[in-house]
Image 1 (tube, rainbow, N blue to C red):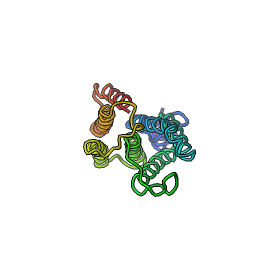
Image 2 (image 1 turned 180 degrees about the vertical axis):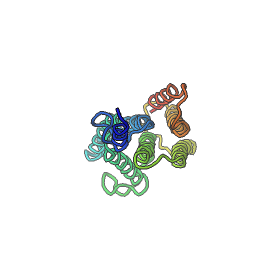
Image 3 (image 1 turned 135 degrees about the vertical axis):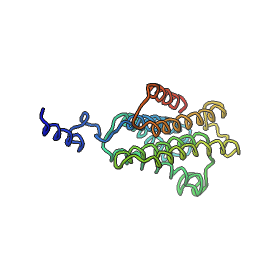
Image 4 (image 1 turned 120 degrees about the vertical axis):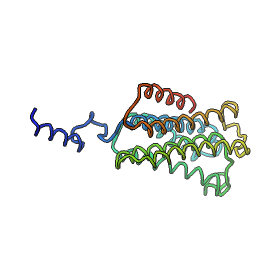
Length: 240
């Protein structure tokens, strides 16, 4: 192969004309699969938690039950789709969708929803809805990192910000539990409240550690790096 052929091939690869199998994105760099893995676990956890709330919310009306059904199914399907690198539009949909669900949750816990059995009445904050929002917030952070990696050169500052945001979510959870902010609703958790606390903090610590490792070892990867990352992702999965 002559020099001109090599140059043409390199240009094609650089432009994305020659890339990985169809259905995957050329800009999914070495960090991409790990970021998508975290987002997939978070979407799955949020989806399962929403599906688990269908029964308890039937007494409030089919509108609420249908909302949890639709959101839960979408999030579980998204968890499967995130295992591959699709075009960026799908990731924007996941980011915007997660942010929208968080927004609805915040509205329901502050001003109250304009419909339902008690319109305009703020609902109590439970561990279940807080945990779902925690995983959705992490999904937003991780998908934003993936999209930034795709559209611009990786920046150390945004990596640090992402770690700090995730750590802050853990601090907020711990503060909420310590101050008794969460309502002791039987729908909150199927286990002891202490178990939910430990799981949430383990989840946050695992994600923060993974994002920190992705920032520290973006180019060179020591031999212990992949097993550690897989272990941390397993911890995040079990905790969630």
